[in-house]
Structure formats: structure tokens, C-alpha cells
Length: 421
Image (tube, rainbow, N blue to C red; front, side, top):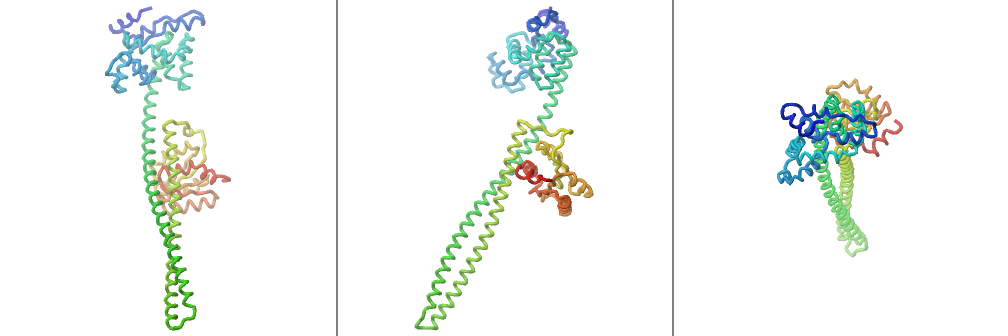
């Protein structure tokens, strides 16, 4: 078997290192001795072709672990280096048989020791490939990748196959992360908008409460004035020595009492109107708070997804969404699917023919439509069709994502409306 130094020398003279590394002998002893022999013959990073160093460092070690390894070299520049610079330094270290390379190799073995022991029991490339596919299916990629690449029995076809899988996964993960970040930014913008509306609503509630208190004080003052005026009227009804003066006083006090009574009635009417506005504001405030809570929950789910969207074979609760903005339909379907809802859409007659609405209503369990983004004709047609089919329809406050998603996810709203449908 060639020494690591001879392998390095052969690479410098133009011969790929991984071809020499693949020539390492595979133990032919019984299974009881395979594990120890395999661990002794496992390839080091400098024995592997530089083509694989980038994927090994980027896949099998986290940035924090790589920084800890290279920090042992007492390199002050690395303490302030960016993740990209740190990764480049780790890739260079992987190809060197010096202190940095040995520390890197030791860190890889220590972190993935359990997975290395699982693969060490195998001595056949087909068996190694089968175990790799099982680990790939379970998402145990980092440890399995290092165990396969460093295994002495891994041949060149298997090495290229495993490298190709990891390479494509890096592209898929990057694309998925970009989509998740875009969704998070959209949801964060919705959350900020809703929070601003909540603040304005709370200010209006405070003003309405102050106005209500002021009206109550005015009513109390008017009632006191009315009582005093009534007392003066009653006093004028007693016998007077001058009948003419008593009659004039009675008329004056009666007119004053009528005026006070009218003012009290106007104040009571104004108070009732203020109370109605206050109740409406409280309902809107409650709806916005539910929207805020749901958006916060969605942000948490997007950051750490626990529930995937329904697959094409799965079926959720069919719900029809009429009107709104067509450019949001795909996003509404994706997010609604995470709530167990299969979303049917119709743009309210802009591009979709209204003749499709009867068939869509018959398929859905309920219909939603935003009151601020739908024609009167389409809204009236949806209401009529839902009444004919005895299905509920839910007018939404707006065509925003938060308004729809809060209504779909509200366990006190949608399930209750969908019962017995």
C-alpha cells in the first residue's frame, strides 16, 4: 500500500489522488475483523481527490465546528473571517498533511464516529451503496457522506455517484432556502402591516372610550339639570299671591325642562352611536389580533417547518376562494395546504368564466370571498349558489394573505361552519 506522502507526490506529478486512494486494499478477512481493519485503512482527507474537499468541508462540518478546528492553529485572522473565507481555508487544509489537515480529519472522525462504525462493518461496494441510500432516505447525509468517501472499500463509480447526490442536494437546498426566505419576508411585511393597524385601532378605541366617558358625564349633568328644572316647575304650581307672575314662571321652567329633556335624549342617542362604533372597533381589533397570532405562528412554522404541504395524492377540505388577486393564488394554495385545506380558486369573472362557479361551489365545502376585491355580481352569485346548495359562505375583510389564512386556520370559525355540510 502506498503511503500518504507517496500519494501526495503522485498528485503533484499529475496523477489524481483519489485513483491511488481507491487502490487501497480491502480486507478479505472474516466479518469479525473487517471493522478494525477498515478503520485502520480509512482514507484521510489528503488521500482523497481535491475535487471532493469542498463538498466534504461544506457538508460534513458546520461553520461553528470548522471555526473551532481552525482556531486551534492560533490564526488571529480566522477569528474575524467571514464564513466563505473560513470555508476556503478548510478546503485548503483538507488537502494538506500538516497540523491543520490532521485537526480537520480528526474533527470529521470524532463528529461522525457512530456512522463510521456502521459503515466499517461493510466491505463490499454494493453493501455500502445500499446503506448510503438508506441514510439518504432518512436525511442522515453528513455522517454517511464522510463514512462512504473515507471508506477503503469505496470504488470510483460509487464515489462519483455519492458526490453527484450531495452536489445536487446542495442546489435543491439553496433553491428551497431562497423560496422560504421570500415567504418569510412577505409574512413579516403582513405582520408589520397588521401590527400598525392594531396600534391605530387601539388609538381609536382609546378616543372612543374617552368620548363615551365624556358623554356619560354630560348625561349625568343634564339629568341633574332636569331634576332641578322639574323641582322649580313643581314649586311654581303652589298658590302664589301674583297669578300672572306664576304663570310666566311656569311657562319658562316648562320650556327649560323640555330643552333639558331634548338635550338628554340627544346625548343618549349620541352615546348609543358611540357604543356601536366602539363595539365595531373592538370586533375589528379582535380580528386583527387573531390575524397577528396566526401570522406569528406561520412565521415560526416557516422558520422550523413541522407540517409539510399536502402531496398531490392527499386530499384536504375543499374550499372555494372567489375574487382576490390572481398573483396570490399559488401562494394561497400552498399555505392553505399546510392547514389541511385544498383550495379551489376563481378570479370572480376577470379571466375565469362565471359559468364555472356552479361546478366549483358544488365541489367545495364552503366559499370565501374578499369584500374589497370582488364584483357585486360575482359576490351575489356566490351567495345565491351557496344558499341553494346549503353551504356556508364567508366574506373576508380584505384580499390579504393574513385575512384568508386567519379565517382558514381559526379553529373556532371554519370547523364550526363546516360541520354537517
